[in-house]
Image (cartoon, rainbow, N blue to C red; front, side, top):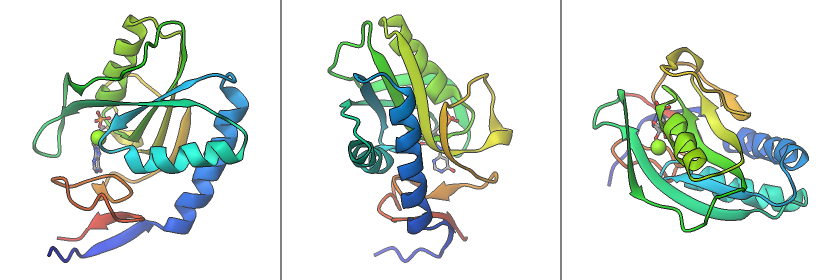
Length: 176
Ligand code: IMP
Ligand code: MG
C-alpha cells in the first residue's frame, strides 16, 4: 500500500462549505432546466457533492459525463483534446453547466466548451473546484470557482497524480 506524505491545502470542512455556496450561486443563475456535463475523471467527486448540494437548494439538473484529456503523461498540459468517452445526452439548445476539477492552462475546458457549442449547446456555464490563475495559456474563465490556489500540483477530492490519491477527502500537496 502507498503511504503518501501529503500536506492539507484545503480541508474537508472548507470544501463542504464552499460547495454549498457554489450550489447556491449556480441555482440562482442557471435556468430551471439544465444539463451538467462533468469532465472525467478528475471532477467526479466534486460533481457528486455539487449535485447533492444543488438538490438541497432546490435545483434538479440532468447529469452526464465526458471523458477527455488535454493532459500528457507529465505535469505539463498540451493543447490537444481527445474525447475518450462521450456524453449520451443531446446538448442542442440546452443550458449546460460544464464541470471540471481544476482550471489550469484552460485547454481542457476551452476545447470541451467548443465541442459542446459545435453541437448546438446554447448557454454554457463553467464551474471548477480549483483555479490556478498564473497558468492560463488560453483565454477562458470559469463562472463559478471554488478556490484559487497557488501554483502547486495538488491531489485529492478526485484529483490525481498518476491516478493515485483521488480518494483523499481533502485537497493536498504531495511532499516528495
Ligand atoms: P488544463 O487543461 O491545463 O486547464 O488542465 C486541466 C486538467 O489538468 C484538469 O482536469 C486536471 O485533470 C489536470 N490538472 C491540472 N493541474 C493539476 C493538479 O495540480 N493536480 C492534478 N491534476 C491537475
Ligand atoms: Mg482532469
